Length: 625
Image (cartoon, rainbow, N blue to C red; front, side, top):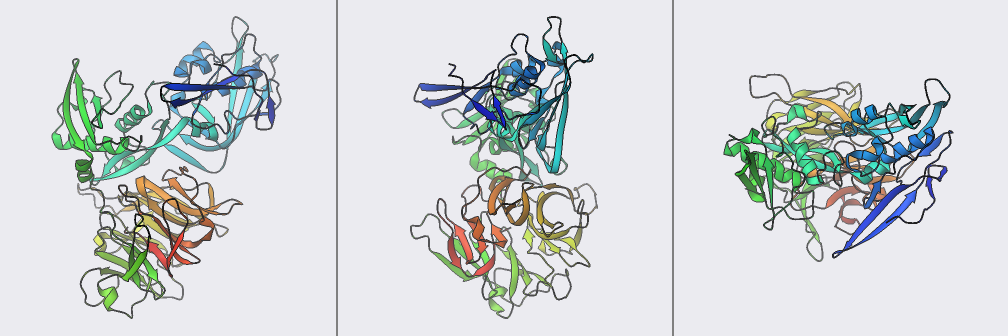
């Protein structure tokens, strides 16, 4: 029910007059408590800030209020901007502010523009203008969400501007004839309405996370719940950015059975997904890959346990089972990387050592030991930085002077292998810390001012290849980290004014059909656009990045980011004490591993729900990868 009217502040404007209805529902057994609040909008023509639902949490449901009789143009504009944030089916209330033709053609689901704050609006034509009143709405663009639900952050200051033309209908009611092409939301409204999810596609037999955003509740257009929205997005195919390097197992044209609005688990924790007849003659191996994509996509959407996904074929009013996969068989099909046994770092004696951090033990004690193999039997060799392969059978180490790269087995003995022919001598360290992907390729960048570049060593033993990076524009690679799936690489680039910015590039590899073109990195996109300076980063579970850096005018912090550049979690505690060198998070999704970092106290780690703890003196902490 409606509550008493309350005052609210929208930017700097005191708002009165019309109301925006919201409701919160909290379930206690079978009882619900419904709270309703009301806010109102400015009604005069001067510039006003419009920030719908600022500070409202995701429990709030917003319902628009239709236009009042004889509403002024200002009230029509404000009411429409409010109604765009509502949960009305088909956004029916927002359409009531439009002319019939505009209401019919408006496609709010085609795209979303996200503004860092609210909209400002100002009249540019008066009511007596022969062409009718026109209002300009402006703001600072933070990001857009395209028709594939993919988040696209804006780098730098981008202005948003839209002109809304108003006309009078035959009843002398003002209506908008030129609405925005999609939704326009403040950042707080976007976070209230949408949530990030991962779709999964195959790249070389390995699953790759493709982050998108779906409605947290039923979608006003499709009337689908969040799980069904996500499955629909998976079936529609990967985002444009990731599409060149991944593939979907679903045949073209595969969709949910007509009329499917909700998907849920049964008592055996099985999700059954009805599909159309495009999957009628699918082979079992391909069907199981389809089910694997679905299982990985859906399992993080709810706190409920998902043990199995079954695909159903629907045609001629009949539904039959196609195939099913369990969580165990899906892991095998997805070829997930081996989960690490150890964490690694370079100790104060410049040796590569390993340790086990047991977060389940009561004392949480740590024990370090030199890695086995030639690095233990050749004591004169000193290490600057290192990376360990995902199977923990090899280490790539950079010599103490920062010029020599070696690939060393972590089993047996014998002499040190020959130096990998990358880099050259000089006074300054030139090679970055190396990085492995799950295919066994080794990546490293040479920071030599005369010959900078990104290098790949195929299989860790092949002839090094210089990798073309599109969009570097003369910037130098300071550090890098290949994703375990091998489809993406995170690059820390040195910008102007001694700042470093984080980008993620798409790794394009030659196909197996006679393509002899070289591996390249394409379409760099900002992975932490909110940071004015990034100092360290690491890949983390579910395709995320752990980023250490500073926002403009802020203190150092460590945040989890999606690879699309959107923030997904609050800062880790105590990040101000971390060194500007290295941080490490494991990509293990089944059993989370603690974050390990280099600080002024040496190597530290963060147990769940606790503060940072010191392990030992040293630097360059890494997990396999």
